[in-house]
Image (cartoon, rainbow, N blue to C red):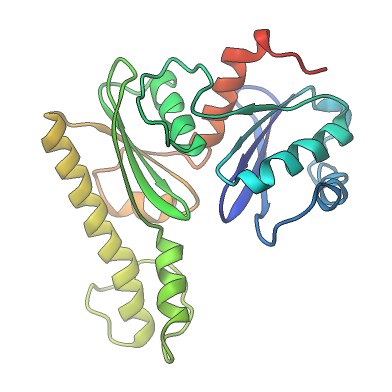
Length: 258
């Protein structure tokens, strides 16, 4: 089985691919930062609740946007499994044409998945992470551009943290756009306000590219926003992880795990 690890600013997501259709996933917090020994202790028994033996893991791929954690996670997993995980990034061959020397591994994995997973035409991948990102990619696999905005939870945490009387809220759509109390007022702003921005960005990208792009959302909050709009055709919270798996599959024959 392949273990794919996506190290993000807020969470580390693990996905064990038992086969192409059965995937077991879980997350842990990225913060506070941990040493390789702390990760070793934390990872050593993480498979048992899911009925997986560590011996079942034959391959590991890691994608990361948090460089201080990358090597600590890699070393811990190597100690547990006895072989080297593959670390992938924007320079890993993936059949993608992109010119940025700054593209994060998550964006690159999103592009790889969008290109190889059978979506038609030009695509937009919206990633609801710590940052809210929009990645556009054309039919031949060329990344035509990226947009980065504050993530929804990032903005909400800032709003609550910087105000004296605004409470923490459940992120869900209220019954009406105009709120009648503090909670529904905030829910409207965070859900319908961001939805308006998302729909507007999709329209602007479509106009700029001269096409009606296929739109894929991913990340933990995609499932909240997709039912509220017809501009997002697909929601796949494992889209980025699938991109990491594709990068491993495309490069495993030239990788030495020893």
